[in-house]
Image 1 (tube, each protein chain N blue to C red):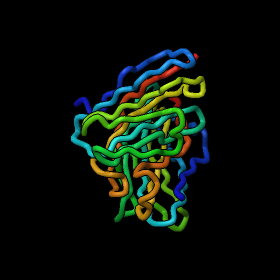
Image 2: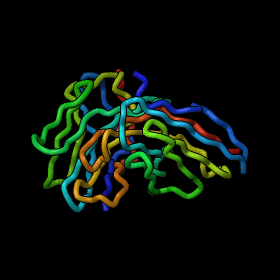
Image 3: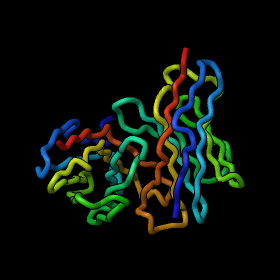
Length: 117
Length: 115
């Protein structure tokens, strides 16, 4: 089975401060990990993914995420938050070794990020 | 830059009515998906189509049917709508199944209310 957990329903950050949105995962094999962002009344937009290789992945809009196999985590980070980063963020996982789980991603419940001026 | 296009964007149905959500992608992707999004529950997979001519159930398929009409189009049908199907529905596609590490791209969503 594969699953992902986002332990925080909401994260509040002041503009200019660093932000972290947490994600932990559970898979039996090697994970494919993704981050998506959703703005109000819009679809999900792809931010970044980890498939293999360097544990630090850089993505769109200055976001990055670090894959930590020992802690089974894939936290999303940004050095300096913008008010426009306020949105709903989803972590998703796919077990690379599992071909029976629908060829699709399992999503977390989402974390609402609020960046205040 | 159309990507994944869903119609309609908004729909109100009465309990027991039927409707079809349409989805088309112009990225020549092989795999297509239907998800529903509910508050506090993230996205849950309803049905997917790994390639043209195949469809399979996801996590929450009850009350839905799908048709992979051709490589571009993947429709979701509610035969007898129930209030529990009030949700936001997202169509998505990927070049290959995600077990190849491929990225899924989403449409803008369809807001469905069943009264």
